[in-house]
Length: 199
Image (cartoon, rainbow, N blue to C red; front, top):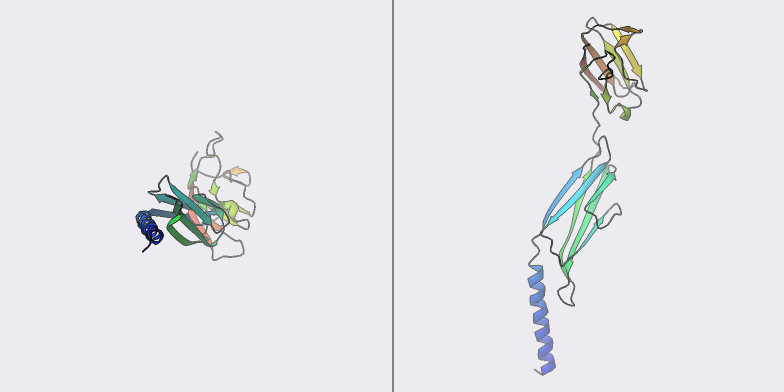
């Protein structure tokens, strides 16, 4: 073996050992999390532990964003994130980790939450019935009844917080019962509960 061939072989062995040394240090811990689309758009995030200062990290999300650890404003659908970790200990660029995480953002129904009591005594505190996330259901219908089954309040599509009156007269302090239709035309999708008025 001539001296040139010897040095070529020695260099190859050195680079192979170097590559094995660096590739062996790829015990990265990936922590992935996501938030489904519900009352707000979906989101996803990635955390990578044991990243070294000499690592060259590339993160490509399928929505077009790159080199960020979290993304927001995701609609329902399939997504992925491609992560490549490289290092360049010398003149050779080594790939230490190359992985893709696929995930799905689901569409989850945004819950309507009706306050179970309010105090319409004109003290500017809790004077109106609060219904949260109602703006997500523009075709809603709401009906409120007293304990005798008489309707004391109703409204559709444009929510104006109820002030505890019926035909301009304050209703009695007691428990009332509501039926909330998410879509006024769908009588099968409803929410029922009670509301207590205290003054």
